[in-house]
Each structure stands twice: as structure tokens, then as C-alpha cells.
Length: 464
Image (cartoon, rainbow, N blue to C red; front, side):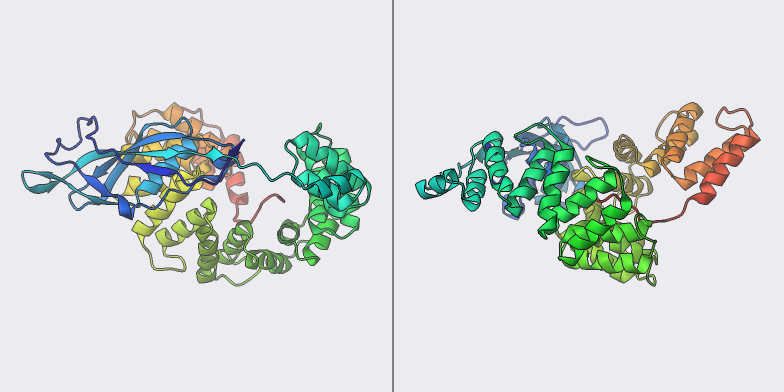
């Protein structure tokens, strides 16, 4: 087992990189970082959950003023999340420029970062008194034995013993184990039964999870009305996910009549408890005037609270606020910084946004090859705006060889993903017979009608 809590160590490596033909000439004194200024990169949660480790080598192009002009992963750890987190994290270091003939010079240098976990410290064994009490049938002791179990199967055995005696916490935990297939075969129907037992005792987490099962039709027949009823019970008990899921139900009119104002009220309760997803959803609704007067400053404040917790979508949305000057003074450099952080966590929206900044030269020197790299990263995740922008570049032959057929493919993928501008481009292409298409008024009309139906909404699925 591995404990995911050790801070990764910084390994210094100051060596010139192999330079591309367009890069700066080698320097007589290489650029170097001030290691005391380097904050430790944040470990991506998904990588941490999957216990990913490795060593990353990152290259930086340091400008004459010591700023970072470009960066790239030279040697991968084998895990893209770790690679991007290291690259983005190390960009927060301060650098001294290279020197050539006594003058600052633009030059590449490299650094390494090691992501390493320590062996898990085993939980202390249960005292003989707890073990004896559990063996005699004490449900609290059995629950304690489950917490201290050395493996999932043993934990499940103790949970079942405590749950069968009516312990609500054990009933909830057993339902969660059955839903995940942890320590026993996955069984959603039985999970629902144990959630129901705990929910009937007032356990808010079980009430929320039971609502999720009804919403998804997992282990029980799909029933949005029952789902909403259980969300409401969890919400009234103060459970943050119950509040957010109840807000989503009102926002989407699922299991209850749509009411955007009530949706905002419940999302605000969850947001005030610190749930990033609720903060982002509420911010988006306020930014677009859904259920409340439009308030970009308040929206940006909620994005900031999510971003400060390390949420990639919160970082992306706050970056967008800075890029557009919505609710805050426009600052392309700050937008670039936030997008890079979110992109290091695999956020496709931030990847597409970075492509846009590099394409247009906002906050960074215009660099179409780098823009293409970010667009492609986002497009690989089926991000509709990135797909459309790639289509535009292939149609115009900017940064790539002109290719109408490839452009058409990107526009179709973007349109299928809900991108309104891509739908409109397809409508025009079918109407005029562009992009290698045969004119087709019917298909053009279909795309135009789809484009007209697209409008900004807050959407999302209920979640734990």
C-alpha cells in the first residue's frame, strides 16, 4: 500500500537542452532557477488516487528578463497528469537569465521533478478490548474493526455484522462498499437496500446516495420524483451534496417543477459550505442572469473561491473572467497563469483557452504551433470550441496545410458537441457547397435550426 501524502521533492538539473532550429544559441552561462522561490507543484487528485509516481524532466525557454517564454515536457513520467502538473508548478519559480558575452540572453534550461510516495503507515491494531467487544456482537466495536481492517474483505465482513444490528453508519458504509464493489461483488440493488435502512434513520449521506440511485436507475427503477425527495431530506439535514443535487433538480426541472430562483438558493447553501462544484455552477448562473439578476462580480467571486481550493474548472472560469474583464479588471497575464494551472490538471476548457491566447498573442507572444498543440489537446477530449478552431485553421491553412475535408470533420464533431458557431459554419457550407460538399438546402436548414436552439444553460449530473 502507498500513502498519498508525502510532498514530492525537487531535484535540481541545470543543463542546456537540445535546441530546435529556431531556438536561441547556447549561452556561456546557463539560465538557472532560484530554488527557494519554487513552490511545490500540486499533486493532481486523480493521479494521487491512482498512486501514480515518476520523474519528469521539463524544459524552459528563459527570456532575457528572466521570464518564461515557453515550456515543454522533455522526459515524461509516464503519466500526463503528473507531467503537466510539474511543468505548470515549476513555472512559478523565479529564474535568472542566461548570460552571453556579459549580456542577458534567451536560452533553454531544464529541471527535474520527482513525484514519490511513502509506504503507508499501517493503522494501529484494534485493542484487545475492542476486538473482544466486536466478537461479542457490539456494533460500535464491529464498526471500529471495519475501520482498522487490513483489507477490504475483512472490512466488509465487519460492516455487515454491524449493519445487520442496525448501526446506521455501518449500513451506509456497507451500501457504499456494495455500490463500489469494494471487498465484495458489486450489487446495486443490495446497496440501495442498505442505503434505505440508513436513510430511514436520518443519515444524510445515505439519503443523498439513495437519491442518486433513483436518479440513475441503478439498483432501483429510475424515478426522478423519489430522487428529488431523498435529495430534499439530505439537504434539509444540511448535507452539502444533497443541497447541490436538489438545486440541480430545480434547475433542470427533473422530479420537480423548474424554478431557477429556488435552484440558486440551494446551490448557494452548498457553495457557502465550500463545495467547488456548487460555487462554479452558481457563479455561471449569476454570470448569465439565470434565476437572479446578472452579476459578473459575484460570479467571479464564486469562481475564485473554487479556484482557491484547487478546482480546475474554477481556475478555468476565473481565468475566463480575467481574459474577458467580466467582474474584474482584464488581465491577460493572470488569465494565462490560471489557464495553465487548470490545463495541468487536464481541463479541456483551459487547454482550448490557452490555444486561443497563443493564437492571438494575448498575454503571451503569438505562437501558432503552440496554439495548435493546445487545441489538439482539448480536441482529444472532444472539446467543441477546440474542434471548431482546428476546423477554422485547416480551412484557412493557418499553421497547417489547407485541408477542407479535415476542416469539415472538425466542424461536424464540434457541431455534434453543441458548438453553435460550428453549426452555423456547417449550415453555410451545405448551403453554398463549400468544404468539398455538394449543396444541400435540407441539411443546411437542419444545421441552422440546431444552431438557433442552442442557448446558455446551467447543466450537470447529480454527484457524490
